[in-house]
Length: 380
Image (cartoon, rainbow, N blue to C red; front, side, top):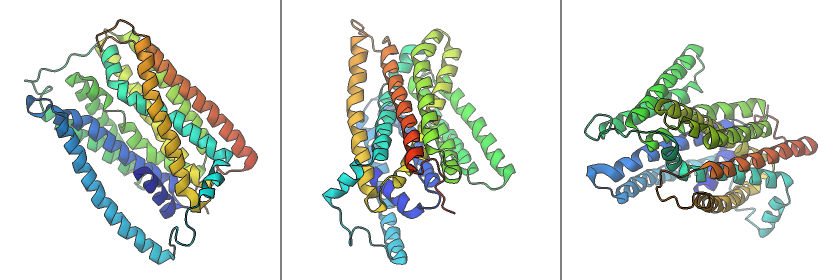
């Protein structure tokens, strides 16, 4: 429901202008939220020496309360916009069941929906298993809890550095001064290297995988701005699918080769995780802003709802399939850090291949039917 409301709201506020930049910026901030949860959920669960997941849940509730306040503020801003533009959504033209038929009759919609379910099914279920996959393939030595690297203070410091990476890289996208732009980006790169080094010194898989959203925070607004001004959304989706395939195959076949090499394995893991995060950026920057070009504006909320519905089928199915494949290919293995993840990762790479094929078909359909997916979002 939140995803539908946010997507519909951005289309309403930014249609004909920087739609992809707005969606990219929104998703970049969402990735920062993902990183926050990755870092602080284990922190709160382990706080005080006794593991209790309820503390992490309470942390999530606090974030939701803040989000509720923000939504209430947005509600009044949206009402003010309606008063200024004379738009009163869904009063004169309420939702009808026939609207769903209009959406489902669009070939472009089905291709985008399939791309979405394939792409997200190769990312979100992977996040569930990623930490364990890294534990199985990396040679990690967890820091002593009595030292700085094993204490609680380092978590706070690492999070502050993560915020520096996010804020500097995000702000560089909107800086018109070239000196300031490259200066902010340079500071973000240095902070990212420090962040990765701290993750390595802490010696835990979760601190290493927490870097996943950071490159997405940096480049999603860049990609969104490119789509707004230059177009090429379908092409970018194909590039994202290729990066997805490359990353999962690297995890499956290259990373295990560095088992026993502490530094080498961590470097390969960091690079692959960052590239996967970059691949993840292409969906909000290119796919979501493409939906308004495929259906009528009056039913855009319904279109997003159907895409989320189709997407959630994949998010229900593929974690089960990964678990089934992992179990069947590791018969007799009882140690959870001794699993072989090759075939589950190959399965996820196959999803990337399918997404690439759908992206190729989408590009052909766009060219034949003039859907406008390769055209800029900004109407001059």
